[in-house]
Image (cartoon, rainbow, N blue to C red; front, side, top):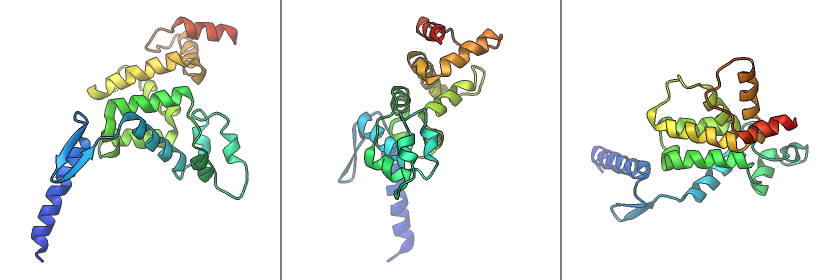
Length: 196
C-alpha cells in the first residue's frame, strides 16, 4: 500500500469533512455517500450541557448556572461530575439563554477550530453566566470581531432580561460612581434595585 496516496486521500477527506462541519448555512451536505446533518439547536444545547457538567473542573464554577449547586458537591462516594451528569439539572434561565445565543451565533463551528471553539472552551471553563459577564466587561472599545458583535448585543439583552444574574446591579452601581457602563438600565432592573 502506498502511504503517500493514502495520506493524500485521507487529507482531502479530512478537509472535506472539516468544510462540511463548519458550514452552518445548509441543513445537509453530501460527502460521497455519507450525509452530514447539522444538529438542531436543542441537540447542540444538550451536548454543551453535557460538556459543562462532565468537564474536569471544579463544579462550583457553575454556581451562577445551576440552582442549588451544593447538592452536587456534598461528600458522597461518587464524584460531583458524575452526579451532575446523572441528574442533568436544568441551567438557570440566564445560563440557558447564553448557551443558546452562542449556538445561534456559531452553530457547529463551536466544535471546530478557531475563535468559536475558543469561545466554547471559555464558556465551559468559567460557566455561561460568568462567561457572558466577562464578555460584556470588555467594553465597547474592545477589539471584538465583527461577527461577535450580535452575540455581545444578545448578551446585553439577556442580562437586562434576567436581573437576578447580578450583572445589571453591578452596572447600576458603576454608573452611580460615574463609570461608563455602555447601556442604559431598563425599568425592570431599576425596580429590582429599589426593592433591595
